[in-house]
Length: 451
Image (cartoon, rainbow, N blue to C red):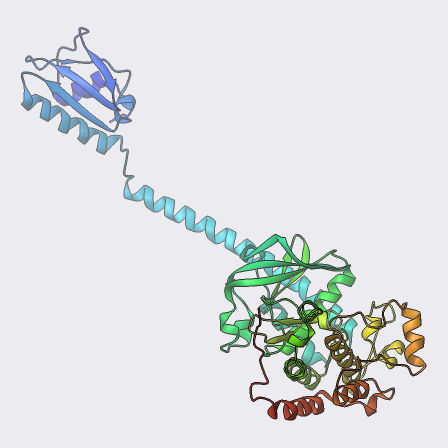
């Protein structure tokens, strides 16, 4: 039956009605069509076409004299509607057609996206290989491994909520914001353990590069490579993954809730008796524990300073900021690029000639000792970089406060010996601090947080 047939034609086919009067009453109300009929079974209605009727939610026939006729008309009209002009539930075949079309379109979109991602991954792999090759000190097997890990460490930016109002730091190359991670961090898959299992749907920090240049790309690649080799360690800030945010390469790190060591020690500048030698020894032991691990991996930090040591609310120490970190060669030395911006006030004497090693990090560790016992003063005061370099090359060194015990004085100056081979290792200093703390307390890994 034609869905566009008039009401008169439909009723004529159903009942063979001989009279369709023009004396009628018809109206619409509340999305329902009302039809009036009389005792002679003559349908009195006027409607433009059947389409207008079938678009209503329901059809009700009203009659005062013939309920049987009314019921029959309702049933027949509903039957005609369902069979010829369905509305509401679609026929099964049309539903199947819709499902098949949707599945085909979804498959096509997924295929296109997969091919696009594959192409992007190839380009990314080529860029990464170039960047790693430029950074040096990688054999082909190591480079292949890092390329694979790089892809596995990627986090879709849609799963990262950046808190733009919470800026932790800002520098010449990047900005660091608080963030929320709305997925499981890749590091928890690459290094499954109790510590990394907590890195899912959690607070984080994001380090966003200020530009998209090849130099910045190489810088990020290098930092990721270092973090991947580190994996997870109790006293090293953990890289959760990387992403591209606002067209800039960005690194996602674990969130440390207690600030940095420099800010912490400055808080006690006017209340120095609160910080004891034992507390400082606990801090230094944790730093040596993390740095010993890095040196065993052949990693030179190159920017070890109190500002780059983070602390949790339970005072667990985390070494952070590997933007300058490098891998040592077979001679345990790293020869830096001459155009790198380096922290002169924390640098060893040989590093003025672009030579870095565990021994140069030991020198920086000695500066941290000085920072703690001076409650966050700036090393070398208001001296310029040129004056600092001449001061050190001439054999001069920083002086610790006279109130500091002789063992601390000796340890700091051992870290600042001109010949790098005469300086202690992190393993040796860690053992020294361990013996010191064992005479004081067995809880040398942690501090009590004082309000």
